[in-house]
Image 1 (spheres, rainbow, N blue to C red):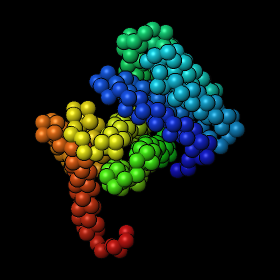
Image 2: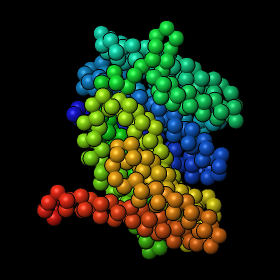
Image 3: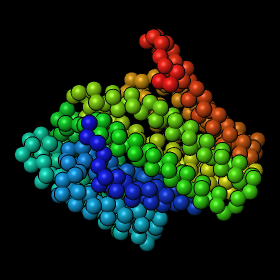
Image 4: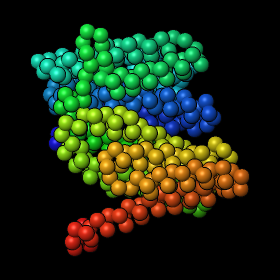
Length: 383
């Protein structure tokens, strides 16, 4: 498996800033409109990041031309992140322009870099046609006012998803098939694991920053609760991350189709859950004893529910155990949301309930893993 290079890690640093920007955007407008727009922005940001990761799957990021391109993409991503808070306001064109420039420019470079490889070359030509169309559509969205901008940018995400799912069909050129993508599934898995860590790190940064504003016993207790929630999400994901990487590495011709589902479609759902949870943690540290309303209940309970739903689908796609526990936990968290609002429970109680339910998933995984280990014979207690 190709290891992640320092250039790729440097590129990822921009997305620490991007996720913080996105979390602050949602925190400042915790309405249905704010949630919808934050989801649109996350979708566009994810498209930039994941397509760049796919480029690193086919090219050598340690080669000078690829490294230079990644640095240019990093700069474009930084402009994208800087414009994010006002993307639906004064800087919509800057956001859309950065998005289109990165998407189209990177695809043209990749098409040049893999010249001579028939199947990949044809795939990139087909992809460029669609990417140029969605990039142009994004710029059109930047030129109009909301709510038309919002509708057009949603269309960008939908069109891209449809194009990827159907192999970017182009009249006269045919369509691309995942079996010809020559996917290094382990590398893609490692890169997406890095993004999950970025999102979790953003959650800790936000709660840590809130804690520094008021260091008293109540706030410290709320911080410990929020930190435990982040650890629980980390544990759910990374406890089985190695098995997922191994499954992708052994997928053979299925790796392209499977990677498309896992990384383009399912991982942004989990990232969204972490971002929403971070907003809930910020509210928890600010007002731990305040009764929940619908907005705070949805971020405190809905954030972990969204993450667990995405991870349940991830486990199902890989054919791994743990789907049932995650699905039950998701439904339970969603069912508790109206109950928490009706009973006006404090934010700390709602966050504790989310932690207990996520912890139950971890326990279920441990029991399942223990039964599997026992069926294979004795093991060291540290293995």
